[in-house]
Structure formats: C-alpha cells, structure tokens
Length: 397
Image (cartoon, rainbow, N blue to C red; front, side, top):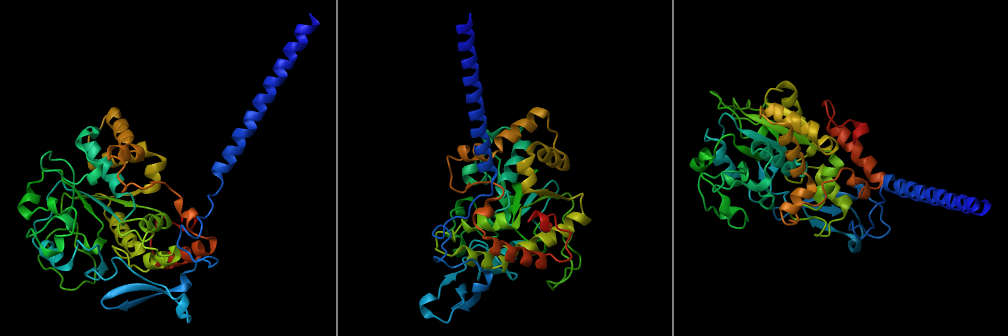
C-alpha cells in the first residue's frame, strides 16, 4: 500500500509544479504585454542615427509656391528639407488634400442646396475614426447587415444599392469633369447637385471640415462677408456625430496616411512639427477640436461628441449612444451585429485587406514618441487648447 501512495504523491507534486511553472509563465507574458511598448528604431522613424527627437530642430519654409519643413543647421551636409504634402493647397486659409480646392468648394458652398432634414454628418479631424464611425452608422441604418456595405471603397455611396456615405467636399460638384478631378481615384463617383439631392434620406455624409468651413449650415438672410465671428448655424434637421481622438495617436496615424510621410522619408519629429503647426490637411487638430467642441457644448441636440478611445473600450455603450442620438430604432440583435461588423478585423476582412485600415489601436504613439518629444508635444497642445473644455486633459494625452 505504501508504494502506490508514494507514487500518487509524486504525481501530485509534479502536477503542482507544472501548474506553478505555467502560472509563472503566464504572469511573465502578461507583464511583458502590459509593459509600455518600446520606441521603434531610428530607421523605422527616419531619424538620423544618434540624433534625438525634437521639435526645436525644425522650421517651416516656403519656396516656389510649396511649403517645406527644414532641419535647422549651419552645416549644409546635415541640412534636410521635406515637402509638406498638403501645406500649400488652401481653402479659406486651411490646408486640404489636392482634390478639394478653393474654386470647386466656393461653387458648392454658396448654392444653398447642400442640406436637407435628416442628414447625418460624421465630422472628424483626419485619422480620428471616420471610417469606423461611418461603418457603425451605416450598419445601424441597415439592421446590422454588412452585405450592403463596401469598406474597400471606405463605404463610398453606391447609386446602384442606394447605400453608402458621401464625402461632400470631395464628391459633390456643380460641374463634373474639372481639371483638378482628373487624378482623383474617386472621380467616377462624382455627383452633381441634382444627383446629390436624389440620395435617399437619411443621407450619411462625411467631412473633415473645421467648424467654420462646415457645409451643412442654414442659409442666412444676411450672410457675413468676413471670415471672423461665429460660424453659420447648423441647418435645421441636421445631426452631426463628431469623433475625437488622442492627438498623439492621430498624429502617428497621419504619418502613414495618404501621401505617407513615413515612406517619403520624413523624420517622425519633423512630421510632428508639420502636424502641430497645421501644415497637414484640415489645419491644426487643436483648432478643429476647439471649434466643434464649442458647437457640441452649446448645441447638444444636433451634435454628439464621441471619443475614439471610448468606441474601442466599450463599443456597445457607444453604439447605443449613437443610435439613441440619431433616433434609429435598434434591437439588441442589431446592436450586437453592428458591434461585430464594425470591428477592425471584420472591416479589414470585408475590404479584402485594403491597406487603408492600418492598425486601429489606442496608444500606438508610445512606439513613436520619445519622452522628450512627448513632453514638447503635450506642452504645445496645452497651449493651443488654452481656454477650451477639452475631452483630452493633460492626464489623457
């Protein structure tokens, strides 16, 4: 009887040891996963070897009608100059991508035909969750069914299905076939004002416009001829879902966006300088946030403020908030289907792996900003947001 007992004790001891070892391994993995991510190497960030990140190393210069960011140095061998992709294409003084230009914008802005009751606008600064939020709203309007959506085209409106969103400044024209449209990959989706008016309600509309350039506004009996003062009131029956994002994450995401400054070889700290100084499309993040924040606080019936971080942390709660604000009846099943089908992996899979969807994570800035650069950035943002009731206080940057 003693031998079997000893054997059993050994088995139990071995088992306990294995469990302890496995638990320790899980603890180590968890500790590593929860640790702050390490900074990317200099090559990935286009930083010269051994040169620390600093905003003070850069300045902006204008030459031959273009805007550049240039390294400050008296040594010609160390001088670096990079073109700001959108810095010189201005609409009412605010940088825009090449396919949104002053003359076409002026032409549609003053027609009085851009707003109708029931319009739903998704307003964001670039790279702050625009497509994610559009997907949520389109799913809510279509019973959570993703089959009618097309993330590969960023859900651009399809007249054959009658489903999708319209980026108004990009797609709506008084005249089709403008010279400035020829190199735009979405030129075949252009629509004139009659076609835009025919899009069935509720229309889902996209904009990156700062509040003062927002086109979904009412017609004023006596319009102002200056750009100062309060912006024109929102059109009756219009609702806006404004999505904000941590500025450092938004800045990082823009580093890999559109013209792709990272692939252009622009050092990351140079890009941060560009972004903070409003030489990126839609101007400064802080100015954009301040204008829309004032509207949201004074006009909550028409503007819902959503934080990207909250959408990622508790999507069900935020989707219910959006549905309630838009007065879209949504069962628990529709909410659950919307949550599943607006997830980053689901959208990337549905788009066929389209590269527009990069990461969709919170906190990627920690892999890009050195502590010194992060401190400089936070100080600049705090100064730019002085007096603003920001959803991103210093403890949340």
